[in-house]
Image (cartoon, rainbow over all chains, first blue to last red; front, side, top):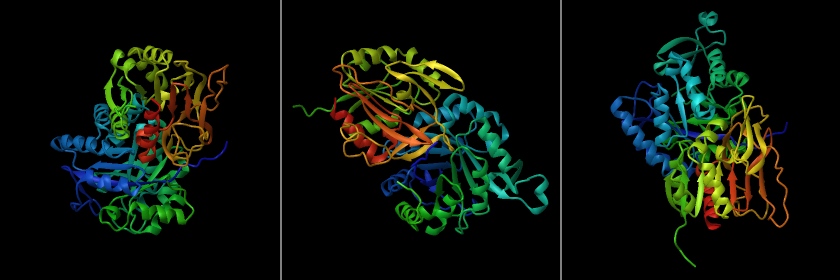
Length: 261
Length: 212
């Protein structure tokens, strides 16, 4: 077996509600940060390797708005587009792919009914299915329930599930997840860096690509996530606030010897 | 000399992100139609066959839409066809997924198999090694292209034949070497997604359109 020259991806994530980009600090306070199509075009021009839309309200009315946003973006931005949030059924996936998504993120619906992962992967292939995990470090007393020390949460981290994060990641991969988007609830919004131990723990067991998410706040935060095993790094507010550009992040990665496009 | 935009049909048989392919081709300078109509698909200046999902499902879908006949008729007339991703894989003799071998369209010899790599799917932007006389990669041979697949053709076994021009094969590597693109007379194909490969992908599509 030989190597691969595949580049580490830099992925801006746009949290979208009612057709507008928002980013919550620890998911609790939503703050408007612009038009998703315009932002996606900006990131494309900056050299983004992929764009992720997260539908954070996912009400019935907002769904139609989201589909229009996806289509408008896919028509102008010629890089892969992942859409997550509120995906509950195979029909939701059919619809998202039809309006222009390349990959679909599934989170709480897969926790509620893991067979959904198998159904999507069987129908469309593992490559369209990104399993999103919102992960928290468990309290020391929780070690018996969560042997890895990491617990899967829902509702933006407010609700702990019964699932150990590593066990759930392993199961989802077996069921057909083609990529893992690992979001640290502890780190999210802190701008203090990714949870490197979490990334490393997931990498350890994952033969599918791992996207590190949550905590990016400065240029020096990205290379350590790659060193910990991430195939891609995802960030939101640092890009939306104009604090960092995609190009700057890539420059910082390159300076640390990471292969980027 | 005509300045008319070439007409391209993106074969819309239910297996691929056809809208992205159509928009990228428009951006590259084509008049694009999304259809599975056989006559339209045969008559267009160029035909793009996208493909996403399992090899067996894509072959079945393509045959159900008579895509195999459309491809054969076009190639018999020396008319350009471009396969993308699984739309490339099904052009080979067969594919093995989950231990089951499925017959492909058989335009090229060889069996598509799972890559041996530590991380699969191969998902992301990779470099390619294109021959100097490649038409598709003219001006973009040093760029990266977006791949997302677990299966690939690991050997090119079609030898130059008589007076036929030698096929131009472009390679990439993920765990092992595999065919990233092939240019063989009117039949071309890419394992990566040019329609998702940013400006480099648009340029590659423009190169293809220029050959029509």
